[in-house]
Image (cartoon, rainbow, N blue to C red; front, side, top):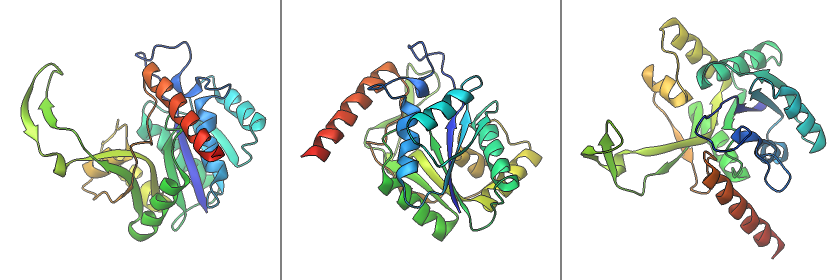
Length: 238
């Protein structure tokens, strides 16, 4: 079984709109709906589980019904951070869906609505080879280490750096064991599975990412998403 685990439990006080960024409407459709639809349409995804911001769970269910996201299996409460939220989703998949070794969970940020079928497929393909497939891209800009965000003191070779994205596909049993190991070793509070895994000494295997697979973090990003979505629609009609 292949399940999508969509993380939508985060808040950002810096986001300058009156609703959480994953629920901002773009062309009368919330950003999270665009994301769910990508997994709804993917032929290899069997079900979708959403980890949701408290107070918005019923809204996600209503959106799924309105926009015909029939693969939605559950909407679960989030944790204090992405590590806890992911754990909640994995626990549900093991206990309620009977998933285990050989089954794949594809973890994705609700605020990456431009993810493509190709990126999801390549993530899953790498997972079947290496127990994981983490979307990543090369860094094209110069990188400088800083401690205060105002000045830098050490240039970093960009050829030694990868920019991590989602989707991130994992063998479910492998990731479940790693999460339990992290808790037992008091390695908690991570905002990304790769951070948790590297803290445990695990090697990260990359799948193809994309510069178009943007993360909507700011009001400017919302405008960029609108423009990219419109461009894609025009290209489809041509």
